[in-house]
Structures are given as structure tokens and as C-alpha cells.
Length: 156
Image (cartoon, rainbow, N blue to C red):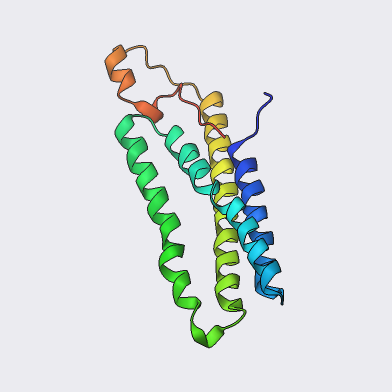
């Protein structure tokens, strides 16, 4: 296969994001901090759509995919709820705690993405090694199995 995996896309964009936040957290000049904050945004903005696509494309059925997308967006929004409370006047001008917390959240997202890919690979391997006969089921019954169908393979 000649394609970029979802994990590689997430790792690439999160790396850009972390580099940007790291420079912003420890640089002294306001211009360089602003430039690297912009660079961080270039890594942060595409990460969520890639994650949503990855999660929803590995769900069987429309409703399950929509719920998976909603959960992914909600989980990603937790940082947006907590992090602004770490950018207060007390931590001015560098806001190291806010940037460090953001970098930790990005590291957690990388770890979870790696674990998700490992799970998908293991589940695909398990399904390949343990075929299940569903020929006794009608096509409609098989279709209703969605991602639980033994022929379904996760994308990574």
C-alpha cells in the first residue's frame, strides 16, 4: 500500500504543534513567539479532522460513526475548557504552565493514537486468524453486524 496512515498524519501534525508550543513557552521575543504560535496552529488545526475521520471510518453504520465523531470532538474539547484557566495574569508573560499542560495533552493524544493503531492491527490479525462462518445469516442480518461482522477490517 502506498498511502499515509492516519497515525502518521496525526504524529506529523502533533509534532509541528509541539514544536510550536515549545518555542512559544521558552522563547523571549514576542515576534518569535507569535510566529511559532502560528506554526503550532498549522499543526493543531488539521489534527482533529484527521482523528475524526480515522475514528468514524472505523465504525459500522451511520449513527455509530456520528456518535464516534461526537465523542472525539468532545474529548478534544476538554483541553479548550481547562487550558484557558492556565493562561492567567499570575503566569504572565511566558505562561509556561499553560504551554506545558497543552504539550502534555498532545503527548497523551499521541499515546492514545498509537494504542488505537495497535488495537486495530491486533483485532484485524485476530479476525484473519479466526474466521467466523456467517453464511447461515441473511444478507440483512450480516449487514446489521456493521463493524462486528467478521469480514470487517479496521483502517489504520
